[in-house]
Image (cartoon, rainbow, N blue to C red):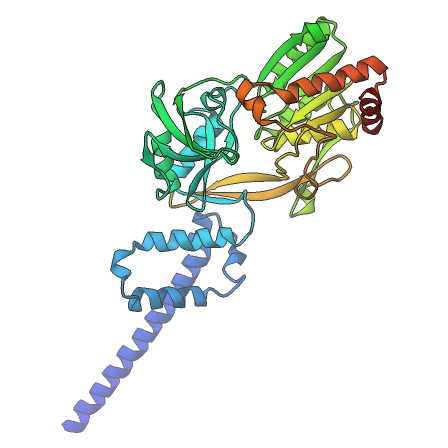
Length: 426
């Protein structure tokens, strides 16, 4: 009886073992199939990513942190994942690729739509300081003569030094039509000083036109490149032609973003049909694109002076480079920002946004301005008294340059020759 019971027990044990092994095998295959197809398809991830490299070290480290780290209960697991992704993006060494939280994503989308209420200046955190990296044209900050690279140390007398960027910005911005007292530290000033700025929700025109009759010059300011900018620019150019002025200033200062197609359509007013305006190169060369002039055979062929500054970037740099390379314009003021790349936003499953550089653009002569920037033909820097007197030295210098070209009536007068003329007159 004992022997029979033992045999039954052994048989039962073997049956349970084999059944468990079979279930484990089937379940593992199911998980593998689910993870390699279902999850990857749902998240729109290519299947070969799974086998591209070994992530065991990542999971091993995470497991150690989860089980051994003393303060793990104080840390949210989602924060750990976000930090991992952020570090991965930082390792690309690309200032234009970003991993954005839902709040940052909202601010980014508001910026693209120009739908926000504040002093209209872009700030960033450098070490412990809140630094103005760009003052937007026609903004409350611009009207108050806040400058690039100013340090904002306080907002309504609240110290910003130890606050993160998000909390600092909350004190500076919104709501519209309220005032904020900013304490500013400027590099050449010994003492800090205060400026009162009225927050506004404003509409910035993408194109502004003036006829400078006393100088017989046309002036067009391009503030951004959005979907209707090329049409507005075309109308502005007609106004310049109808005024019968012979020369044109194009102001691209603080124009830091926009659509590539708008730049192509604007350039088509100046460059002969089918000539290359910009080249875009992708990682896969099959997607490379060449953008050509769409001109209708009516060329604006007068001499142009373009005004640029450090905040001239992206589509405006495409415009300035092409016009200079085709000998249509000369450039005045300071070197530009150097935005050589094209980004695409990707919505992630956790509601965060991943903005990645997917292509680089090159000028008609294959310059990549990330390396070359755009250095002006004639450099003109503001002086301290210009800020005090609200004197636009760059615009006045641009007028002077054009007058010299008019005076000597040379459409292709070289920059070197212009400088020689200046010396002769001095």
